[in-house]
Image 1 (cartoon, rainbow, N blue to C red):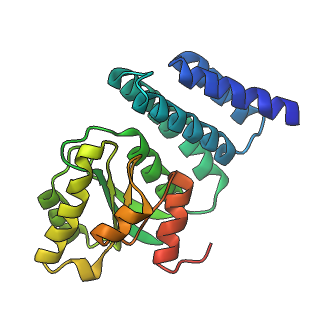
Image 2 (image 1 turned 135 degrees about the vertical axis):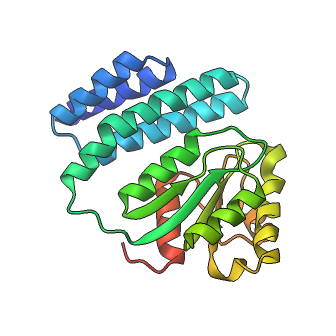
Image 3 (image 1 turned 180 degrees about the vertical axis):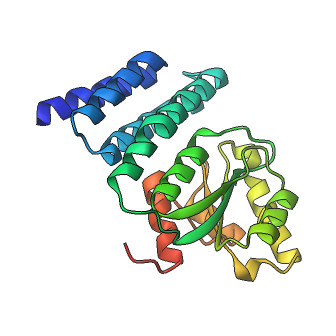
Length: 220
């Protein structure tokens, strides 16, 4: 069984790194059919996407390949892993509400979408604003949905300042006190979190869920 798990994980990773949708679907379906934990399969997808993101940052992959990998992964998550996770769990109970989006000037969708899926699986109601979201749109979403948390994603160093601008916009509209702010993206560091006054960040989707639960004092 250990060998088989390793074989499935390798197939999923190699399929994503070569942008092979059909092989990825085949490997994922095989893993699920053989009874492997969908959480573990999702973790492989997440770590593989993180590797693809690193290769993009290093110039080994182009933006089109980055987006392609994200679209393939979203298909796997929404059509196979997410339904399996729901089927294996009890009746869904909403434990919190989160608005999430990629900040203005940035069309990176991979990390944000995976975090949104993981939060949804953890029991949160997620309002995904998509990509290229302005500070004003985040403010409008907070007014409309009254979430406990908003998540601001930024892949590019040049879009990091929009995270700061969004927090300032919340302050100016007297909303900062009622909502926690988490930030994410390759360029984000602990020092940046402190500098802009955010409440936390996660290096990956699994860590992001833990951070949200921690700042909302929700037990694991």
